Image (cartoon, rainbow, N blue to C red):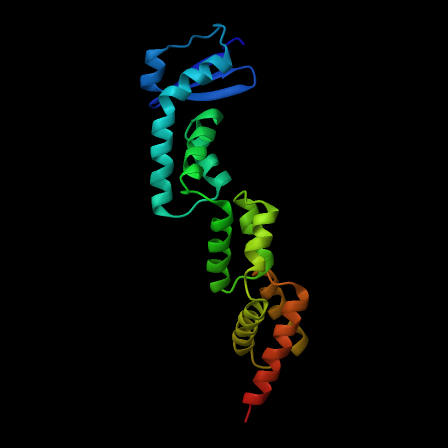
Length: 209
């Protein structure tokens, strides 16, 4: 494959060869300079980078995990974003998985429990896990471990709070639409939101003098 272009970007060099675009840190580029028009064996070059970038990539990944948990795909994307090649990312994350420092199943459970504690519904939690690259299976398992009654209780609390913030004289149907829309945005299904609204209204009527 022929190198189409090489340009310097701060402390890195951006190299394009066909459909491949990758970043090379300054010290590595100076160790093995690349020039426009040069033939490049991508597989061989990736192997050359792997032996030099694996350790820094691993250390960077560990530093990220020390700040908060990450899903595998999320961490892989972070490594790619700063220029590490796919083979480097794969090896670094494989090492973390082998040592139990990264586990998507555990991450999904922790994330789901944390977000449910903030009164987010199942749909919203599932969407967030999907955006982080967590598999459907791990997301399903994480959500199934949560108490369905807990979701209903949280939705009732949100609905009750929204009802109390209603404007005096507001049309009840408009109020219901507003509350249901709020619960939908937070990730509750229509059926669950409707049940929560009915329970919140029943509680409000009981509280009325």
